[in-house]
Image 1: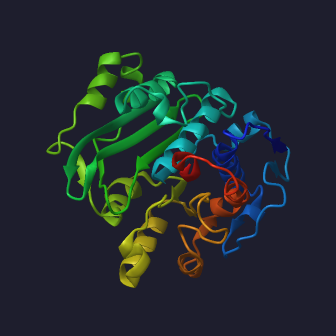
Image 2 (image 1 turned 180 degrees about the horizontal axis):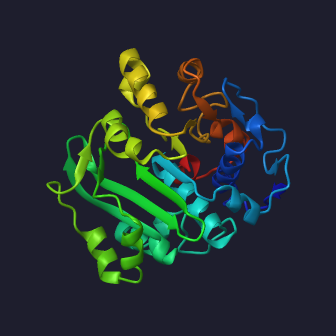
Length: 318
């Protein structure tokens, strides 16, 4: 089908969120495979705001393709918003164009706690947010944990998102919820509040090392798809330590049926050919036969467009 989005100038940067998630679902099943490269291609799309697909798949047909699938997403705030858009699609059979307070803008909410609780409650019993953020510090970064779990019982679709800012903030989480947790916590406001309010470093699992996290938490799940993105950060060991890089790739590939590295969307204050991931790093992934979902290339035209206008930093990054 053709997805054509006509938005105001302020909203156009957010098309990348919609585009990435639609493309991601399609590429999993061989649709729009020309957007998923095992090589490196920085080609700018001819039409920045019109995304054309090879197959006619309505939202319900796409949702059916996700039946009985588990998807795990690991990344920063970019991945969070793409996760929220994806589960909105699964939950409501439509892509999100929300009104304030928006799911894709935490600044619309009174506080981080309000955002975590409110965004989770939008999906009723199907989403649990093991989330906490304050101004204290753990090692090199603030206490920032955000682990989201969506489960659609009727179609047996599971989507998990783990917040990862390499290497500044460790991944922290409680015991993963099971189907019974979703059922028993349905409508239990106190349960949700407690989950968001209680942070105890003695009871939470804390992972400073991404390889250890993949080995301990993700590999036992054996998701159908593991999608990782370093966001606007760069993991020094993955980028510069060849031994660590190979250990990371081996663990990621063994942790899921399909491992996909998603490049970071283009930032409007970068030069046109400057991506967070970098060509040499993507070439390394290519040599390891890692599938690359090139979100940078898809969003590059939008970023170039906004280089010519004054726009706030948050929008440039997201």
